[in-house]
Length: 482
Image 1 (cartoon, helix red, strand yellow):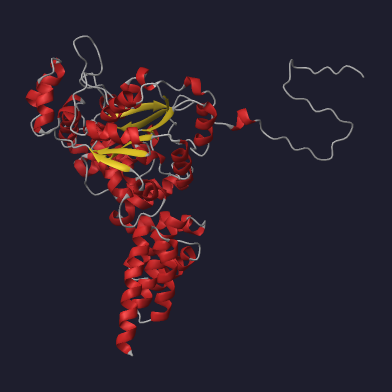
Image 2 (image 1 turned 90 degrees about the vertical axis):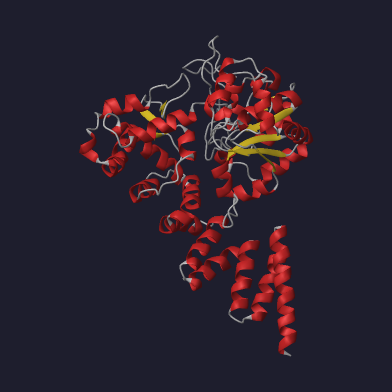
């Protein structure tokens, strides 16, 4: 047998053949596994993990330069530890800077200090997480800070939840209150609502209770004592993260000479976030979109600064904590920006049409379109319809159902019925229930009974229960006609 020499050094796999008519090369398990799942030994131990890595907001620096003050006990601590010990999906819901990430982090460390903490990168697929946890042969917990970012296709899907539950792997998550309200709205029936239906939810309030304030008063950290003395209408954690101060500075700058352009850039980033479009965004996009906000505030009358000065002002670190615009970079070194999320939570003004249009134009994939459809559903129904139509045409069931809701609301009952029929035929209980109600309203009792029966079969539980009540009412009505 002759010796084969291959230029270029050592090769992992080599195929030698006289003739090759067809060749299939499958990726190795190593290369097919996402990088963050390949080595469980690199997952941090909960007892050795730090809160900033977990996603907690930085606080005003202490005398020693530390970024986090001591943890002050919160009212949910006992219940939170009990829920984490029981396993399943545990979710802490609250406003930005309410302290939910820190509370969940401290509870996790107390309950499972020896567990490995798996923190999936935002935007990564979670479908291989259960297999990776099982292969690791170590006690693990999955950490999902800002859960809404994982309630997307290939994210925290029902199959992933089920598999992790069977493995006894807890999932500890946090979620901003506004995002939670969006995903639990009556029209949501997708991945988000399915996950939240099985979650153990604990609310953490932005304003601290008398008991929590008493705990804070017993602390000797100067930052906490200062927050306690000055928090006023705000929560202590909110004050420590400089949220109110940054919000006030931004609001003042929007209509005052000096930093009006910088404030308009921040406004554009805040509104883009509120549409559901995932950030960060390029300097060019914010530059394009901020002009509307600047003109609306007064334009040239405000003597707006240069664009470079505006970005410098918006990205300057305040109070040693954070900035109005948070910088990021792409692989090519370009500028990308996102807003401080506290500003997003505190903004409820109408989103300009230009921002909605941009959200559709710059949507990268179905995940963006799903989020835009959710956020625009009530605020901008025509935008929501444009986001949902391509998703419905591609067979995404929750989007098809929601498109039907939009059409029905505007009086297009026939088209709504067609879309609901498509998705109900695939086993969607909410669509079947809607069709049952439509048929009953139109006097089509036999058809309504058929859809009720299917809705009862498809579920979920609350749909089955309501369909049963409708079926009982139909039986009574039929007897009355005899």
